[in-house]
Structure formats: C-alpha cells, structure tokens
Length: 212
Image 1 (tube, rainbow, N blue to C red):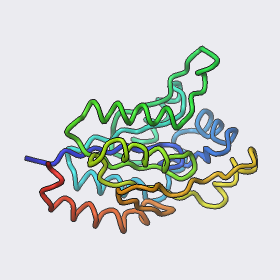
Image 2 (tube, helix red, strand yellow):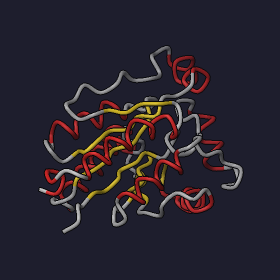
Image 3 (cartoon, rainbow, N blue to C red):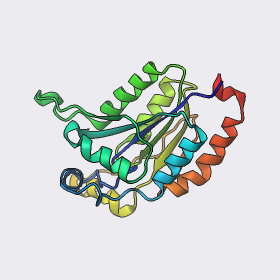
C-alpha cells in the first residue's frame, strides 16, 4: 500500500519570521502583530505543498515554543499563507516557576518522541531552523529512532536574524548542522531547500525500502 510519511516542522523562524533568537522581538511579533502582517519565510509554503503533493496523506505537525495563548494567531497564519493544515503543538504554560519556561529543546524533543510513539509505522521529515537548536534536537531524534527519519531540512537564518541572541547573551546564535546519518538539506529559503530535498524524496519514493 502507500508509504506512511509525516512532517514535523518548527514554526518560529522556520515558516514564520519571528526573529525568535531575540526574545523581545519574538514576543512582539507573536502577540501583537496581526497574523496577516506576519511574514512567512520565503518559499517555505511552496516546499511544504510540494511535499504534500508528493505524500498526499502525510500529516503536518507544527511545533512551537510559544505558549498556548497564541494558538489562534499561529493557526490563522498557517491558513492565510497557504501552508498545509495540521495539529499545532505549543508549549504549555505551567504555573510552577521551575517549569514556566521549559527549554525549547526539551519541549520539541518530547513532542517529537511522542509522535514517534503514536505513529510507529510512520517515517518523518523534520524541518526546522538553525537559530533554536533544531539541528541538535533533530539529530538526537534521528539517532534515537534509526530508520524513522527520512530527511532533515534546516532553514539557515540570515546574519541579521541571527544577531539577536548573540548580542543579547554573548553566545553563538546559530547552531552547526546536525551530525547524523540522515540526509540534511539546508538553505536560507524554502526554495533553496526544495532544490536538493525534493529530488531526494522523489528518489526515495520510488524505492521499496521507504515502505518497509
């Protein structure tokens, strides 16, 4: 029968320009900016729709470290800019101080592992950016679940986008590419990533080992 494939994607600075490495800018963009004024990352909706065309039954799961109170805003953005509809998995706002702001890495890792467990016969395409440790998180998932990750797409932040965190905290704002056996496709736009990722997925689609 058909191949079961799912897509797990980050939201902030992967599909939506939030400049999330800068805390204040990200908060302003998420909470106050009209969804119609939020900028999509160039070409990402095209990439996602091409993947949806290739795998018509593929569910798209959107991960964000944003709290649940911006769910409506992000959902509207996904719909307005023509991204495939799908479940939105946001951070829980926990009143306990020690877990009020769970790390983005832990949050995404937990949700991704839950999806791996909930859909044991599904292989996943993981899409994120290099501004919030997504490369490290996705490499961890690929290592923990051999054979379950088809490909990793990493959107590279522009130098201007990447300056927020480094200037605020005196640390490197972008992450090195993941070290993993899974093919990693990079680019500053969805169109860049698409040029290399889609031919690879098309090739995998024609092979029987994808559906094992």
